[in-house]
Image (spheres, rainbow, N blue to C red):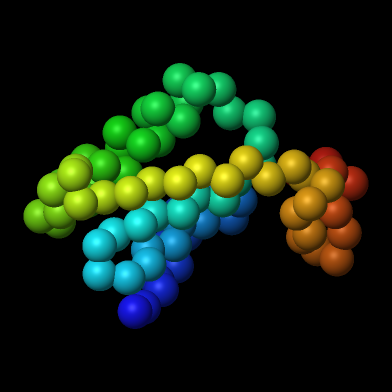
Length: 81
């Protein structure tokens, strides 16, 4: 099994794990259900463009509180970003 990290934004990371694609999105909490739906649809489209069928793909979104995210040596909630 392998893990590949794909980052498109400093506050958003995608991890692709194993043979059957599992995408784990870790991002700060606060996105709406509609935003998450669009994200899932966009990730699915990107994988379809690579030949991966939607029924093979699993996507998990982890909403992380800024108090649980460390950056620049501090909690993200204290950095103002």
